[in-house]
Length: 107
Image (cartoon, rainbow, N blue to C red):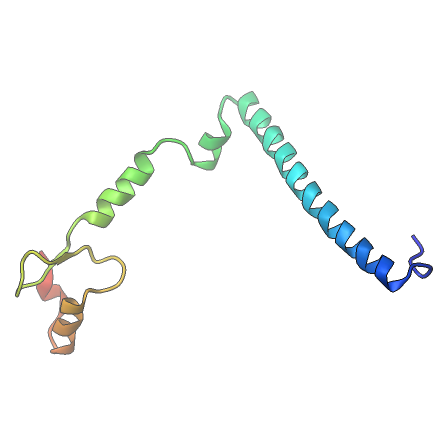
C-alpha cells in the first residue's frame, strides 16, 4: 500500500480507522478463541472453567477462611487480632518498635 499520495489529514484518519479496526478484531478474535477453547475442552470431557481452574467456589472459600483466621493477638486488648497477612496493625508495629518479638503475640 503506497501511503505517499495521502495528505496528512488523510493519514491521521487512516491511523484512527486502523486503531478502531484493530480493537474490533481483537474482540472478535478473542471471542472466537474462547469458543475454540471451549470446544476443545468439551471434546476432552472438561469445561473451560475446569481447565483454567476457575470452577468450584471451594478454592475461594478456603482462601477467605485462611485469611480470616487470627494468628496474633494484642496483649493490651485481646479483642484485636491479626491474621499475619497483609499490613501489620499499629499495635503490632508498636510491639516490634519496643524491641519485642512478634512471635510473642502469636496465639
